[in-house]
Image 1 (cartoon, rainbow, N blue to C red):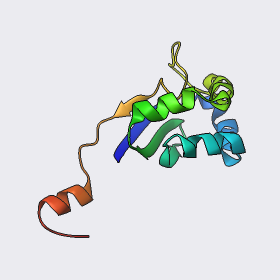
Image 2 (tube, rainbow, N blue to C red):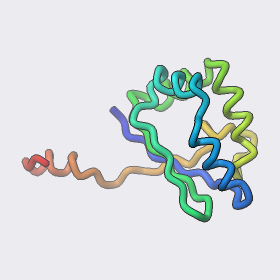
Image 3 (spheres, rainbow, N blue to C red):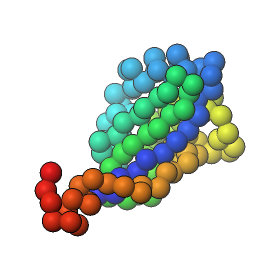
Length: 116
């Protein structure tokens, strides 16, 4: 499993509505995410709109391709695009900045022979 962390910026005037939309994500969107490999997926949001997303997946490219093949993803991404700054021509699910993982406790414990 690959851990993926990413960043986006929600427009300051849209933060409250963005939170509301994610309090009740469409059931067909939830099902699509689950069936295309977006495991342990979470979104974190700072008060200034900095968004950090995290997921675990066998392949980010395959998870993104799987979602791109669903009808619901097209609707969701079109609906969500207006909430973000600096996407250019990208949809939110492909226009994010992926962050590099530089530390993982379990990996280092395993490497040093310790267990958690």
